Image 1: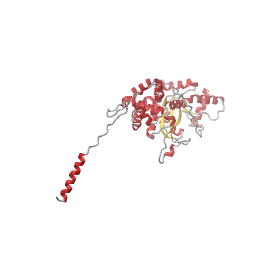
Image 2: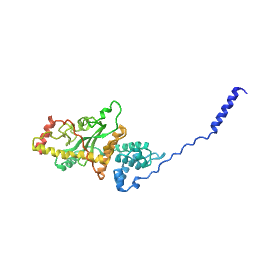
Image 3: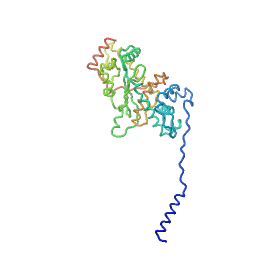
Image 4: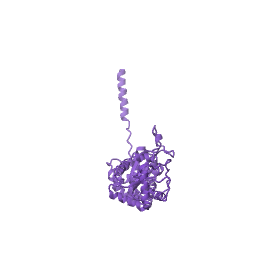
Length: 349
């Protein structure tokens, strides 16, 4: 037998050994048991953990569940479980692994679930976050503010709040460090007297000044274009304009003192809005651990859920006192804005 014949025999034997070996069996995929939280908890426990009543959660499922239906492959997640999982993550600000264990899904799925739910909510943004569309709606907002203490012609209150985010790497990371020396997004909100959010801007880095965010917003262009008949109330971090009144920095008359007092009481609506929003969704108070892209999405989605909770007459959670840092350099009112404000004070106070 030649050497070539021997090598051929050895190859045949070797291949036979390979095919004779028992092929490894594919591990059968197993899925964790899933129990609906609506059945698992009492009404009080459910509200504490999911930040909505059972009745309110069922309404949310009816509103947004249609966009969350899966194709049925593998261990599909029902729309109600997706929405409830996201609510618990945002409301309790739990570690994703803990929330995954509680709902019988993997930790890797939590981020995907939260993003899907947030996208389905934000798709209906125009229905729940909007400024008054006509004069009748605007007058309704003005009357609600006037009922607080008599401050006239107010259509909304404006302010910004910082939402803590993870450290942003790269050359732009330092822009996100705010005055309190932690990374954040500076989120602008306009609310009405019922604490509903009518406008939100959630894309600016933490070092951005409140006045700059407003100056570069679409909302300012609408006010300058005469789209609204009422005006906004803001703190001294904004420039005083005919459509945005700020406090008088150094009041010199009783009318100006009275104006400041009523301004504070009326503008307190936006501070209360922040408190109610952050007490319902604790992630806004303690901060996110997600990517920057998802954080911006979640902030808008939570603002929509905040408005829906008001529409559903959901009970508020105890509000912890949130101290918003004042602007270091108040903007002195000058020019036409100061003149319009002075005439308003003289006429109404």
